[in-house]
Length: 431
Image 1 (tube, one colour):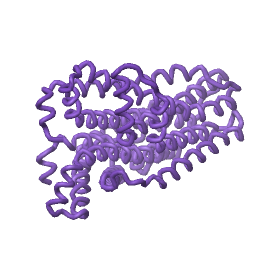
Image 2 (cartoon, rainbow, N blue to C red; image 1 turned 90 degrees about the vertical axis):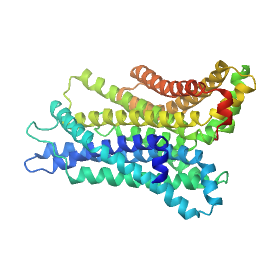
Image 3 (cartoon, rainbow, N blue to C red; image 1 turned 60 degrees about the horizontal axis):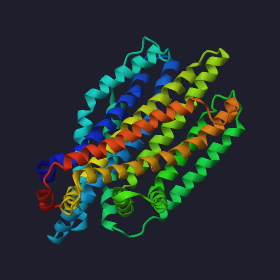
């Protein structure tokens, strides 16, 4: 508790992730409470239950990844502090309880702050379903035990688990412990390939046609995201940068590939899931409109869920990117000061940071796009006998713009802010 009170700014990123995660989980799980109210018809109950189940599952995973990314950066930057506590007599178990306890306290505050926004969000979500004709107008919103307890439990468990894993990862240092990660990565790639190829077993009129390629793209993106450090090192090994800024940027990225893997993972997942889901949904909607058919309730539910899931992913990925990049760039104040004392101008330092962000953006978009194409191509071949749909260009441009703006904008804005500190003071400050 003393640690949290003395340095509250350190925990703002974790608090924001916990707050957003709890708000989203409570908002959608309130649909379970609403569906269980007396007088709700079967169709409305099914729609509400499906939305709560699907988005609640995605929300749980995203909360874990968002909190894990911020806590990993936090704990890594506190390595010297934790080592000092060990030298003063603290046992590993005591350090573990301290870090996990901090995360639980912050998560509990975030979940408490999210209750009122979740109530308002649940009412707005129910109105969206009612306006689209998926839920009867007579259904009233209910925020009950399921919404409240699920938001608190998931946020606390995700925060505690993420803190435990972050501390364990930092304590292991440079020890090789990637066997399980490699196994999961190759397993996800294999399962994704099978799911994408199974699309050809469906016909163009099957209602579940979009499921196999969507799951395939998601699993492939997860596999590539787990291999992010290896992919980044492979790309950097083939780069021949020009100029001092480019050379220094590639050198920094090679040295910090493991630390930057979380940022690259976020970009890959964001690009693949958003591009694949939105493109396939656009192709499906255009095909239904061209045939003159009216969308069924199930089709409307699927469309709403697709847009909702992508919206949640966009919000969380932006939060993860901004938090991770802000913390990582702020932590380099001493490094930037040393470069300036060695003769580098602020413009040259910003050039290095911009080049690093550009490389990360290009690599993330590249592998994310490959995973998305693995799902889009089978779907469009079955649905419309086309290899690449024309709708993909606009979707990809929007996704790439958001990813690039979040990565480059945060890196450059934070670096510019850090450079306002005089170089001598930045070097003299403790890391």
